Picture (cartoon, helix red, strand yellow):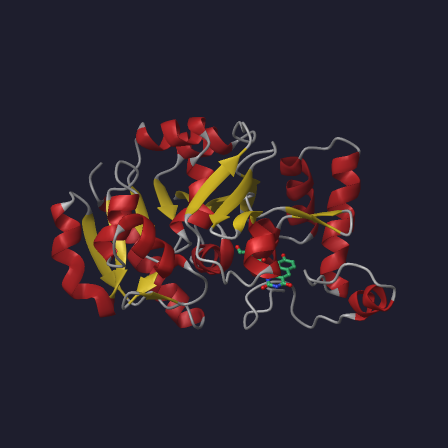
Length: 307
Ligand code: FO1
């Protein structure tokens, strides 16, 4: 079964791993709104989290970067007074070096990513949402910041009062085709504003989703009104007016036919159904392989939900 996953951040990487382990034909469309230049290197954190998770070389506890990481280069950079607010590990640096060199030779991000996934022996296809420049900008009372400056540099301490996606981006090659050929479209339990928002901001992707022939299902990033990681709950409260599964479903109105919500939020199933979205209740915390398998099974159930 061909499944397309829209993903970003920690929840996106874990969902990609869960679906890949379920043995389906998987294409992941990855957020690039978080991309940043660090030490003159192009870093694509969401692509990297997904790629590392699919290759089984991710640091599951930290939620970003590679496992068995060392930090010699970063320490040496620090000793020279260089930029260290965004931590690049020794092994992780290899990714950014290889990618940056290719991008500077005008190889598009989608082609570099394909080459890297092939080298790492990853069976799934990983596509950046776009090869163009698309950047998430966070508006706060202290000013407007590029995503990583706000999230990592300032520790997301300033409440986001608005989110903007900068850049006129077209979908990367294969993105619209994958959505058209999918039997099921899945939106990962990622931050709707920071991780999925930039993907949906691309007009042709929005259109392909609205015109989809396959059913689409989102997995709520909320468990009991909270998220495992990051500021999604805070942002849903501010921008959607609440932190229930129905607020997540409303955010994806027109894009999904079903919503997987956590067992702890089962009592919100009725409110989701009232929005015309089929609720699927499951354990959504992907703490180990067994939990990932359970969630993947629940998500794949949505392939039977009528469009
Ligand atoms: N997140 C942090 O909180 N601090 C870091 O220093 C940091 C470095 C980093 C390096 C490579 C990479 O792929 C991701 C990295 N992240 C770091 C994670 C990243 O900022 C965010 O988790 C994602 O952008 C959110 O989707």
